[in-house]
Image 1 (cartoon, rainbow, N blue to C red):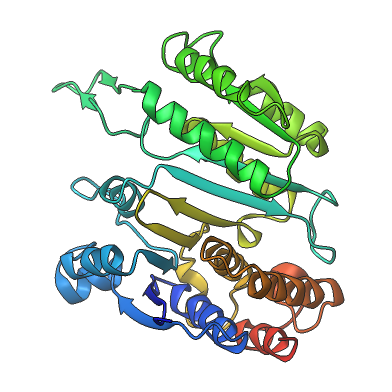
Image 2 (spheres, one colour):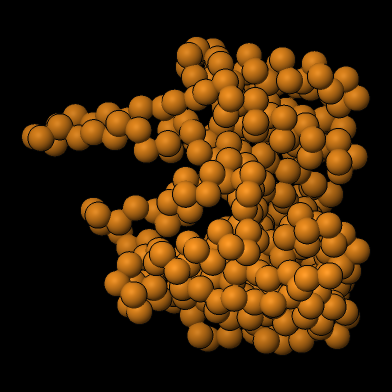
Length: 335
């Protein structure tokens, strides 16, 4: 069997620390991956004069599976978001954001297990027609939803639900006001839902969904929604289980997939051995599931659960006093 090659983008700030923790864990559990390291973000800007060098794009395309640390896109005109660029370049139409409760965190709820499936290439973030008038007094942006795009993301959500034995898919929308774009999405969601009689289909207006997630999050299982709403709701869901440090993300297309920590690069604690690597460890778990290595994924998730629950060498954000290396060591000892 050919050795699986993984493109690894260590990222900016705390990225290298947490990515190195994840690769150590993947090696310990016996994955036998070959890693091809590539630059992106500020590191790439310094080394290559651009945020997303062609060599990096070539490696992502070649290996088809990428593990990515947080990247910094400099603020200001002339810099396009690296994440948006990657999603467009590789048509990574599905953004999959699971949140899972771990005992031992400072989370507000227990027993949360929700997956948000966000359409990743259309809607308000499609980059269409962002215009500011010459005098700076008016700004305009366009949103575009296609039937094909809606069908792909909703079908993805139902197939994910069926594969993982989940019972319910909730389509979140704003079709009462945005009758064109959100209306088309909801129409398609209803049509697709009928093809999956084994799964309960519900729908919810986005503002109500925000309130319900705070008041009664246990009613949700899989949420499927458009780009802007998904961006907001997935972070809200992360807040239910202790914040972005506990939440991974996968960006999945027909050919390629990129798995990432969804939090920022935290330059203030970079290189200080303080970062909690949980988000990127869970992204590695998503990657293993994508590659059909469910047993290894479960071994890592189980070890992580035990480390956090027992408070063994946990980081400060988890109520401990330890650093990234100690946390990683506690993980390695359990694998």
